[in-house]
Structure formats: C-alpha cells, structure tokens
Image (tube, rainbow, N blue to C red; front, side, top):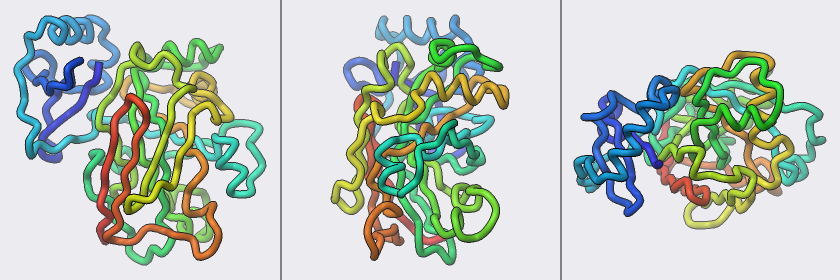
Length: 285
C-alpha cells in the first residue's frame, strides 16, 4: 500500500493511493498514519481490505498539499557515510560501524514544501536518501533479517545539510542537520510488502533540472536490515520512528571547487524507484 497524509500543515488527513493511482480518503477508517496504525496489523488489514474492495471515498488531488506520510514521529535516526561511492567522493574511509546521528522530528516537512536556506549559510547541500519507517518496537535485535521484519515501509527522504555548520563550527554534525525544514519526507509510505529488496532501489536527484545524484541502494555499506539491527543495540526503536539510511555520491560537498551549493530560488527534485518523487523550491530563512 501507498499511505500518505494530505491537507494544510498541521491539519493533514490520512489517505491512500490505490493501485490505479486514485487518491482515497482514509479518515473514516483510521485517525491518522502514525506509529499506532503501523503497529496494528488488524487496522492495516482493514485498510487493505477497504482499498481492494473499492470502498474508500475518492479525494480530488488538485491543489491538495501532500504532507509528511507519518505523523507524530518520535525520532529521526540518520546514518552517515553509508555508500561506498559517497565515501570515495568525500575522501573518507568507509566506516567500520555505522555512523549514527539524529535529526529532530520537527525538521520533517512535506515532500513539496519549501526548504529554507539558513541565515548565514553558504554551504547548504542536498542528499537523496532511502528512509525506513519502523513498524514494531525494536530492541537488541539479533540479525539483519530480524531488522527487516521490524520495518513497516519505506519513503523518500531529503537529508538537507549545511556543511559549514556540520563540519567547521565545532561539536558534532547536529548543527548542520537540524535547521528548519531540513528533512522533507514522502510523498508516500510504501509498505514493506511492496519493496521486496530494499538493496535494489535507484535514487536520483536534480538541481535546477541538472542530474546531480544517480545511485543505487546496492552501494550501501550497511544494508537496511543491518542498520535497523545495529541501531537497536543502542536505543529502542518505536513504531513510527524514521531511519535515514545515507546518500549516494553526487552531493555538492564532493564536487570540485567552486562547489555548487544551494541558494534561495534553486529547485531540487528527487525520487526513488517505486517510492515517489519530491520537489522543493529553496527559500531564505
């Protein structure tokens, strides 16, 4: 299933994109798309049955904003330097263990919402990423297979980053990762049953129509199941939590000088096969 949330910011309603590409209203069946729904197999089964039976009301998508596909996200866990080609382009040694950092849940916005270049920024960068949405509480998982079994679904994420704040302002990466609007998510949450192999997904990103990233999750150093297993050794993952699993080569930081960092007015478009497409126009904070 392709689950999503539509409407003005803060007033989104749950919806579903059916097999024919028709937008359907879920608000009469479930209160929202959130961790509670994703952990409830019975409720998900009712949604699936209603979708297959053509029982859900049709929504007119014209002029309807798409929000982030998951409400009330508890935490956004991020994995850095998780693609062989991205590590090579940045001159970094592939990590022996996953590099873990966080984004605050309030950085999450809709897939087509404006992304704000922070005040004083000269090095705002793009990163297309596969996002994993947790469906079952995970603690101390024992295998990568168990990690995959705890995944509710997948989505497109844009891990926007400010490289000066991240690398040159002291401390950890968090300063360059938590600026307002720095995690567009969606358009859909695609349930795990529709993604048989998360290591066989193509990711692409364009800036002002120019292709910048063209990668595949096959390049991941730590695959999805292992990432979930690993993270569960250090924290409890709850239904509705999100894990951004890293970006392939092609970011501005990895390019020759002068590096083409983002500016207000730029347009970024990104997609992952089967998971949908995002479009953001950059504004100024």
